[in-house]
Length: 169
Image (cartoon, rainbow, N blue to C red; front, side):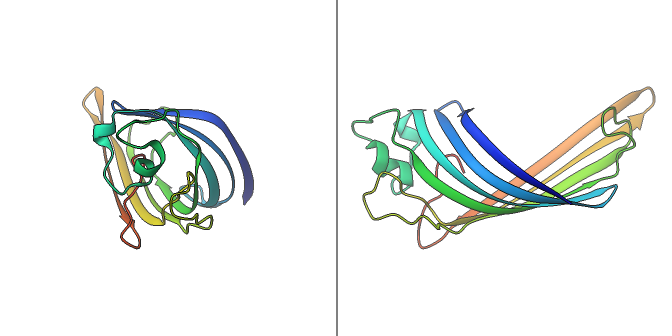
């Protein structure tokens, strides 16, 4: 069992139509159930700032539309708080974690934003209550003299109370 404290300072996430800055604090507990299975639970509080955005990608009603004002965007935006509690399970049966030639690794993650820092309507720090689920699988398969690596991933998110997931989630 390990306790992890994390501090994230000014990380940048960049997509084709937007750039986001994040600063966060968090803590996690990890358990190695066995050599092939790891579990992790984590709480995180992030300050998110929209640095650049193509306003056509914003959906009316999502948190950023109130903060940056689509008609006349003011960027970079003020910071918006977002909290989350997550659970991650990783299953790894590869023959070697650094130079895999055979085996499969998979993970499932559930993330819940309880919206502990609920803000008043019209605030520049609007957070959203949501639930997200993610799953990944990756395999290494020897075929003759080569190793075939394949992977797949999927995720889905639900916003509560008629809300809309933020652009970055």
